[in-house]
Length: 499
Image (cartoon, rainbow, N blue to C red; front, side):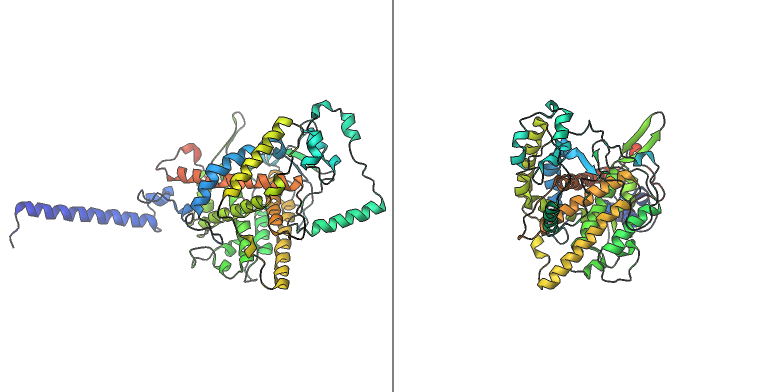
């Protein structure tokens, strides 16, 4: 068959386009494989797929929840995070009382971290709001609106030190009182406490200003940090195979795309436990990557900021045995559990006075709490805790006690952290999560009560989870760019903590 000159040119044109497409396709396939292409060396996928592999699991339903990742992100970033960020900057939440001097109950002390960034600066007596210093004088219901009603009419600064001293309780007790206290202790234990809370009456307790001691990468690393997380995962997380060793092996199985294979052999309650720990672990990692020590110039001072390469090292499936994206997704699960606990505790939180002695600040906190609780309660897909600990009552009770005791142990492990700043934020966030579990699983037969030592970690811990989800969106945007500001990309340090 004869073909005209114009037709020949057309055919040749089509062949040329096909060859070009084939070449481009091969290059894109190489970029997604193990070959060393420019896409892999920079950590980015081809422009045809702007979603970096770190975030490949961040879509669809959150595991063990009836809620999608996308809806959680939108709800948090637009409605929750701006409110809770403002709220926890107020005096009631920024001053946290903690004991950083408790000995590790599980192994000999490794010694304190000598890095400057690890240090925590406790508050002086003058820096602490007088309403918090005088809190013990109000007894068990010291945070209730009724108790603080009269106190709010009196400004703290008008009270002399002598008056404050006279208002303190006589700490000597009679045998009758001791018996009564034992009864109260038994009642408190019956409320199913999930974590160890520091004794407020201890001489080792000190107030810390959380705004002046932010959670960030301090340089604390090495065997001590690895032992903390290894003990948490290996000795406290549930696993179907008791011979499994090394917490990395608990998290990894490449035959399963959605979550680790070992989770498939666990009941709901044990999966929930693991996802909670993994989600909190991911949240801490995100905080460290988002506020990283980029440079420490003795003349120019410290420079802190996001470290994109460190984020990819922790969550890229290539550098995390395929588990980084799954760990990121567990963050959303932990967030939903705490969100549900706050919604359930709303009747208690709405009655709190949030008293510090500063009338204007206290009113702002009260208003902010009411607004936040209104938004929290408006969420339609809360975690359903009623599905847990069902079936045979005796077996369910035993499982619940195992769940509680394992988490209690994790709260004690926080006293083994060698970096004071890491210990401060570890204790606070574990206490916050433990408080959430107490709220969700205290029997209806008992009246739920929350102390300030539980309310502050609950809300501040939730704000950290909220911040992490907001930071995930930031890292998605930074990594999606074809070129990144060199000042935000730094090589990872060897032996980085919380691997």
